[in-house]
Image (cartoon, rainbow, N blue to C red; front, side):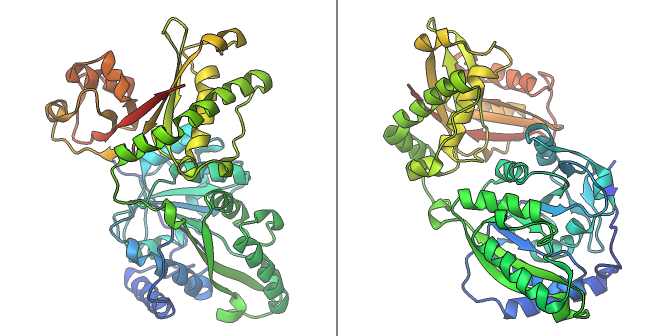
Length: 470
């Protein structure tokens, strides 16, 4: 049975019937497209307001107009906005399957939501936080109109949380061009028109410098989700463009008490954009040039933790560009006699590779639940190997037999998922499970599924990995 969150502010913040809502959004978008330059880069993220369409719809439309080239390419939208109705700590996720809108249902990425709840600090489930919240809902008709019904949404209602928690969530879900990020915020509230213009101009300047430290919640009701994005953007050397700044005094309200609105587009550096290159060769070349640096960072992180109790803080920008790019790695530790001593890693690239190495080396040494924390006396004989993964790609199969017949022993790593459960095997696992049938069935068991389980909803992703020892 599908469980849906009913639309809470249809008929209030935007028209409640499909025909009128379609005309309203179409009119707003036609005006926005006319004001948008013909040649513009495609954003990785936008920041847009969440007031009633008569007040802030034109500003929001200018951000959404930049997303038109992404139709058919975006598969997931990570949508964050502030909590207005229910006080709570942390980042609230819904348990429903979708959100209703007058234009039809918007499906949620429930697998990603469950993954965030399990792995991102501060994130948890609360349907109550979402029940009457408008900061996310008002964006859904724009999303339907611009990107169609295909993308699935990860809606996150942000309560009393830290910007760093938001940044961690965004980094966890960052992905590639299949993932779009939207931050929902208005600016100053209930100042007179001229004062609001001065205050909002200061906010715009801070945002353009990717500097949320200069802002308070009086500057922007969605400060925390916006600040989290700005932190991630600064680390990733993104550029930002202010698309519009206005207030309700410019649109449909009096000028004695106005609310400010702005829209921004954020772009990834050109060098970070994916290119048509062989991912296996790219990883192999990177490890040939920088493998010694990465294994050195891994050992330094372990030594630092033995002295200070925490992983090494990496100066990402001090390293070469390939190590600053997002990457996924596994760090494997062995004893002097060759026995496993710890193995922890990241199945998806969501943070700079050099940072991923430092963190996973620390976790493999001190937080692998199969082993006690590493002792200083073990360090001298500790073996360390580092596996860097290529991006997991969908691997459509018709059945388990089809998978067993087509998987490449000794080459492929696999990620299997079904019913909210996921399991990963590195290519190195083929050394102990050389038979494809055993490999697949043990992987299902690792995912928490029965060895003989198979269903039409099973997902399979394939990747490779290159390793270096140090």
